[in-house]
Length: 199
Image: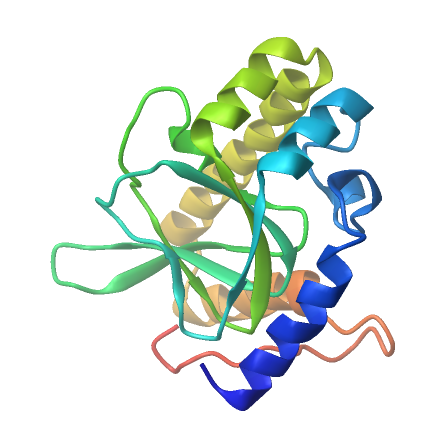
């Protein structure tokens, strides 16, 4: 781990002492926004805050899916690999998004890969703890339904665009997606993310 990464982790560790799901800045953008204090306490006590350096994997296709990740800060690329070994980006995840929840009930392996495209922090929660929270919490299942309903809608729109848009229109659409996801709040016109030419 680089010196920069160690400094980031050390700083986060100091903050971790007072940190909890109930006061997490990403909570308002997450499926936990309406959860009760008791559920937040259960998840807080069982979670592990992890640092992922740029280029590091959170999840990999076909690996066992025993963990759910809730993004605290940073940017995560979620993708699948086609039969030729090429990466196909499905979406980007930012603060408040979850990774791995779509496999929570029916699968035991990840069907996607997730890689940090910027230094990121995520809270890692054991899937069994998350399942128990869903069973005992009235609001969490509804928030999960809303979350994945939105993801499904975005996937449908993306499929339609891939089928109908010309190449230059696809590039423009990709730039708009990056702008909406990664624009800087201070000037509202700059995109801050580093991607490879292939991405």
